[in-house]
Structures are given as structure tokens and as C-alpha cells.
Length: 412
Image (cartoon, rainbow, N blue to C red; front, top):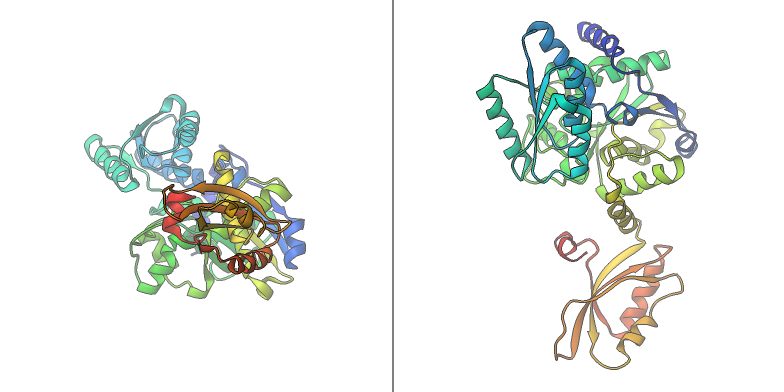
């Protein structure tokens, strides 16, 4: 891989004409907690708040060097890749056409437009990404434009490897352990190819998008039947063919899946304690520290915080999911007797640290019982044991729907 290391270093040097290296910062809070030297590679502090502009820069740089008459680049993305491509289109003075799903939040559309300015045209096409991708590729065929893959491209992989080049320079060598997120695999493939076997590597996926683990189990990339898009920066249905070729011999034990609700607790912790804003995918590497145990004690560990494009309108959802994971909030469907004093009887069940966060009749009728959606918050998870014991003694019938994804989607 020496040739790859050399070309990655050339790419990193070329990037310095566009942006400075992202910081590598020791985090005292995490270091103390885990008994290791924890450093954060702050890709969330790049000009577009993610590492994606690296791959876009390198791929466009190489295309323009080989074919200087290339005037138009195309991508399909609803997030960080779109912003990276837009930024680089303006830098190189070329036209960019960025296809985004119609359902893309306005905040992401606005940021892409801001980074690209007059150099970029945004086309909203399709309700789902697969439709958007098909439209982008059809446009490339028709117009003869160059399609920029978000990850499954050798020049993109090489561009993402510049993260490793910077880490090596900033540390004066390789770290003991390196933890990074994996979605389509561009970042993971690039960094692993650069460091080879000199670093203990842990790759982290969202549980609802564990496409690398599925590929390792099958021996080839496979498409997941469904993907949880909460950690949208890493929620990919199928890992890339080229990226998997560089990752296929990773030990399954070195690939970890993170519960999306638990991920929310890490996002809130980093925001409230450290003042660091991370998007869900950007927090994956930090969250994985909790599972590393003695494997990182006394070692120098680098976590790549891959992105900070977080829409604060999602903060209530993040808090909600974090509370549910921590056992501090639960939802119930309660059968409430329709008689005088029934509500008073229920309120007597609540403990001094319990609070009603939601109370909603789902239907009203002349029957003897009515159904109520009720949300309870408390300060300590063990309080729910006492609450449910009292509820059972009163004879109230109830169903805990906190982890019922179908009902929660419609009711909560």
C-alpha cells in the first residue's frame, strides 16, 4: 500500500490550498472516563462541517487534471456529500448539478445552495434516494457530465484517506486505536488502506444501517431490506463494491453496531458537557467508547467525529430518544375506567419524582373504559419499578408501548 500512502499524501498537500487540517484535540472528559488518552479528530470543524469535501476535492482535482475540458459535475445526495460537492464546484470554477430528494429538509437545501452559490443548480427529484440517484445518473448520460459518487470511487477513497495523513502528522505517528464510523465505506476504506495493520481499527455502524456487517457475513455487498435513517450520514443500504474490497478482511468483532437511541445520549452529553455539536453519524465513534472496555485502557485512541451538520429542530427528538434509552421516559396505553374519581386514583400512583409528560384520550365513547395515551418522565429509571407495582395493585390495565416501533411512529 506504499503507493496509496504516497498518493494520499499528495492529495493532502493539495488540499492545503483550500482548507487547513482539521484539529486533533485531546478530550479530558472522555480520557478520564475511559482511562485512556482520547483524542477527537474534528471533521465536524471542516468548512462544510464534515469530511465529505475531501473526497469531492480529490475526485474533481483528478478529473480536471486528466480532462481539463470537463465543465459539469453531478451528484445525488441529501446531506454532507451534496455540501462538499457544492463547495468544491465553486472552488474549481465548474458547474455542479446536485440532485436531492423532494423530502430533503430546507435547512440542508439552503446550506448546499450557500456553499455552491452561482456554481450549483439544485434539482429536487423523487421522494426516495434511489429515485434521486436514478435521475442524476440519467442526467449524466444525457448531458455527458461527470458523476461524483459519495463513496464508491477510488479517488474519493484516496481523498478520505487524507484524514489519516493529518492524524499521523499531528501525532507524529500512528495512534494505538482508531475508531471511526462507516456508512458506504469511503472513509473507512481510505483510512484503513493508509494505516494498514499498524493501528487497532474499530468500525462503527448505526444498528439500523449495518451494511458492512451484512457484507462481511455474506462475503459480498448485500442490500439491507430496510434502513433506519436517523443517523443519515451513515445509514446506507449497501456498502460500496470498491470500499468493501478494501474492508472485506476486517474481523467481524472489530465492527460494532450502535443503538440509535443510545447514540442520542452521547449527542446530548457532547453538547451539554463539551459544547460540541455532532450529527448522529458524527457521534458514532464517541459512543462506541462505552463498549471498548479494557481494550483501550492506557492507550492513545483517536475517534473521528465525522460530521456536525445537525439541525437543532431535531433536538427534541434527540432528547426524547435519549430519555427512553436511559429508562427515564415511558409511554403507556392505559385503560381508564369512565367513572368519577378514576383520574384521581391514577394520579395517586405517581411518585414524588414522576411527572406526566403527555396525557391524551385516544377515543371517547359510552363504554365503561376509555383508552388513554400517557407519557411519564422520572429522574431515576428505578422509579418505574415502584410506579408499575402501584399501578398493578390498583387494577388499572395498561400496555407499555415505549419500544413498540409501529405504535410509537403513529402515536408518540
